[in-house]
Length: 235
Length: 293
Image (cartoon, rainbow over all chains, first blue to last red; front, top):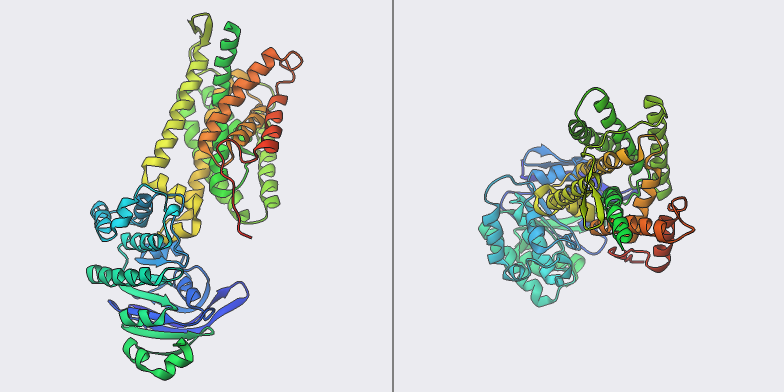
């Protein structure tokens, strides 16, 4: 069985159904990207995985059924979710944000990991005593990702990290992501509208349309398939 | 001038009591956005529990200590059983629930311990010290010290510990807190427990002065509301400053403004609440809530 396996996932908010039974899988160590237009259900997919929507179907992570588990319980299993809009703690300092990231950990390595994050993101080190709310958009996204890594996740969910950032910052961000992945070997499930960039760092891709998986395949194949690109990705 | 300083000192002592109850209100308001109208009655109930232990022969400090523990558990239980079902419901529903809690605790205290006023033993020695012409009783010094210690302890808990950081995070941003693995519900429950402890401290501190009765905290609660409103309902520092200001203002107004005297003292907090809401609704230290529309 796959590291993360999703079968017939139906999810939505109240009476509104957004996902109409999707299947996908993520293997350990992979980077998987879910592409799709606005409203396709990308964010809902990630929210469903961490128990923030009403779900049915079957979601198993590392062999454990987490379809209807509580968010904090799923997080404690090692799933870090960086939500759209980043979800940093605006009233807390950068340092506190990172320490909150390590909330579930009981080991003595937290301090060393904190130093490691500051090495990786020198700008966060400069601003470590500032409230997270005072950071720029790019810095907040860096903080959100660094905070998620502090959890020592086994699976990292990223919801449109490029949203609202200048192209040059986005490039830097993706470079950092690749670097992080090399260091930690974390499995990544990425949701993006910026298909070109995302496909470059991904191993496998799914294209979501109106709450259903329209097509899927190795990232390189999706990138090379002009038909798929024209029909779903718009470039 | 002696009279003035005398009134300021005793104002600070009563103000410290208002401050700890106001801090309890602020603690709950910050984490759950609920104004807990039953906070004073919870404090009264705690004071009765402490009295009951002294009746069973416990020394006063021992009775107070066990009462703080019971209050913590009781506060947690109230959050879980009474408050959680209405969390996120309309403001009106929550207000009605806390008012219901107020009535239940008030009536229950009367039913269990009857309504006859009881003397509560002071945990501090009688007597006083004179500084210049100003006489400060040990009771006043003790109250100020106890409240200072509890406020400092609370500050350290929130600023220096992991659980305190998690409680602040859960209050400010519940969704992100869940995403770092914080059990937000448990943090809210702890918040209610801590608030109940603070309330209990105000209850047992004020009880030797006001005597025990089911209605003993009614006026204290009004002063605490004035303190929290003045300081800003979302500001712990504001609650403490507000409590002291209200305590001193009440005493000075009673002394120097002829027609107020001791009968109309209760009007002072109401005037403060009214004035703050007119001039600066967020209070001295509160932050305006900016909502996107």
